[in-house]
Image 1 (tube, helix red, strand yellow):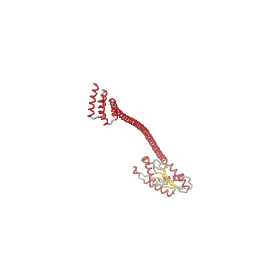
Image 2 (cartoon, helix red, strand yellow):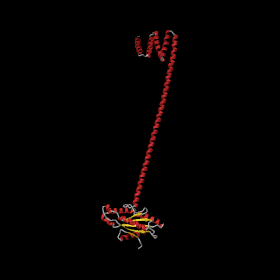
Image 3 (tube, rainbow, N blue to C red):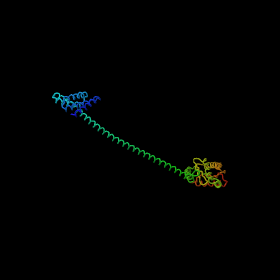
Image 4 (cartoon, rainbow, N blue to C red):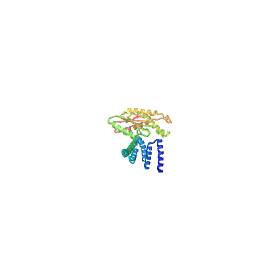
Length: 346
């Protein structure tokens, strides 16, 4: 009895507190507990009064769960009090609300299962999306790797082509350099003896078949040894280059200007008569004589002796013409140098 009394006091305090908040659902629950206490002490009428108070609140709240508990308790109290009609009515109400609770519970279960399945489906979709993303990322990385490889291959090919091109250019330049060294005189820049004579020989053969005149002008610098002895070989080199520079200005595009050796030079002149060759030789002699040596640091006179010879029907090569030009040049030397002599049989 003491325990029930303490329970009544605590429930009463809970009711006051819940009403003050207010929180009616707790108030209804408290009246249900008071009803249970009264039923336990066989105070069925007082229990009925408390449960009816709970019913009023539950009807207001329309809470199916609380209503089901109240209707069940009312059915049992009315049965004890002998009002079976009321007990049966409340029992039916209990069944109705209990079915609603079951329906709501079932719906909640179905909703829960639906939500669960929906969550699992979304999780599966997310998993597949993650796999697709991983696959896409892998493909993107593979594509980027292939592009990088292609870029590297392209750069490698371009680099190889550049290297090969530079190598080919270098080889061409080297070839030209060696060809020039092989064909031209390193000091003066005109044809050397081998190249000049070969070119002239080929041209002479072609011209001789057509009966065209071919003249040769051979000249040698006068007293060149004294230049080397008095002023040094560097000065001798300067004289040789200067002579070639001024004589080249009198050369035509078809002429083959050649250094024959030392201070001796030859002008091979295709399609040129003896008179024209003598005229050009005279101009070259004058140009050489007009060279101003003051720019070299020394003052001295440069002169040359010339010999001119022209082809005949009996000549089968350039050698006889060169020999005749050489004889004419030595005739110029014997007659005092600084002259132009044309070969004659006499």
